[in-house]
Amino acid sequence: MHDPRLTPARDDLAAKYLEGKVTAARFVDGEEFEVLEAVAPLRRAPSAGSELMTQALKGERVTVYDRNGEGWAWGQLATDGYVGWLPDSALIKPAAAPTHKVTALWTFAFPGPSIKLPPAEALPMTAMVTVTREEGSFAVTSEGRYVPRQHLGALDMVAPDFVAVAERFAGTPYLWGGKSAFGIDCSGLVQIALTSAGTGCPRDSDMQQEGLGRELSAAEAKHLRRGDLIFWKGHVAIARDASSIVHANAHHMATVVENTQQAITRIRAAGSDVVAIKRL
Image 1 (cartoon, rainbow, N blue to C red):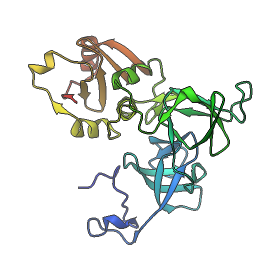
Image 2: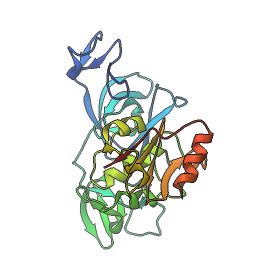
Image 3: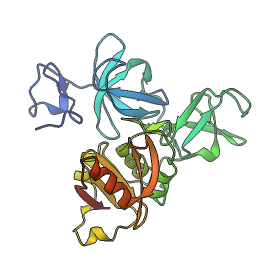
């Protein structure tokens, strides 16, 4: 059974690379695009009112397999393989390859070399830009935007501690499907943090539970270490140490740091118990 979140296949159309693996009326090669907007929604259906499944960030590549003629494109993200509908207006044909990524929670891109100018856009962590030159304290992008140099890092720059990255999001509002400091969900927090630390990470918590690390025994789980991942059905948290976690959650409607046992007790009272603890 193919996971529809990761499989660009419908009854009427599917990706060419799936030919022989799925049934569809026709198969297409698709066309590569780049995300132009700082944060673009990837939705379940081609409608602004449809569920936000995840977000695509500036500089990400998307293979588009279909357009509905009403402003929506159906495709697959290159970064984590997620499939869904994006606004056509958020996509452009790829130009120069990105050279840098945003390492701050957010940064502003200015239309000129002055922080006193009204920002042209706000860019979230892990968004990618193409830097063509440096001017004073700014990096100048291929779009002619001026971004503070200290908020950018090379694409291969690796954060030494993914938990510390997650901790920086404390106070960020909870947003189902979100993966930026404007709004983030539990698995989005894990994905952004691990990606910043150079570790590939699937998008949703069930995928993360299945694909990341090794499961701890009951004895090992009594001694949590920094970076362990605690999973419930539909939820994931990151251990900061033996007694506290950081997670984006709908109870607080924010990313918070809290006592691990208190969180486990509260979530159990709401009807969900821990299903796995994984160590990377």
